[in-house]
Length: 73
Image (cartoon, rainbow, N blue to C red; front, side, top):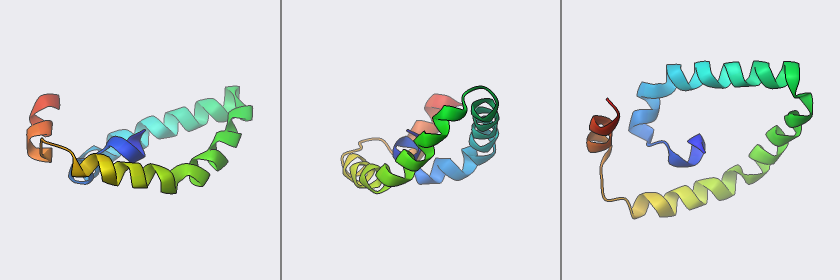
């Protein structure tokens, strides 16, 4: 979902938090749910389609990144 929903200008600002969260999730999956590693393959297989959908969604957005930043600060 992050790939599809995060605005590029806000992505760089949020990168440390995103990285830390994804690292914790990855460690949890490795330790407790190793069968979920198959989802990594699925992610890369569907990433192109997600990016196409993202492009369509972003053309219809009505609020810019500066305004969205105000909502979450």
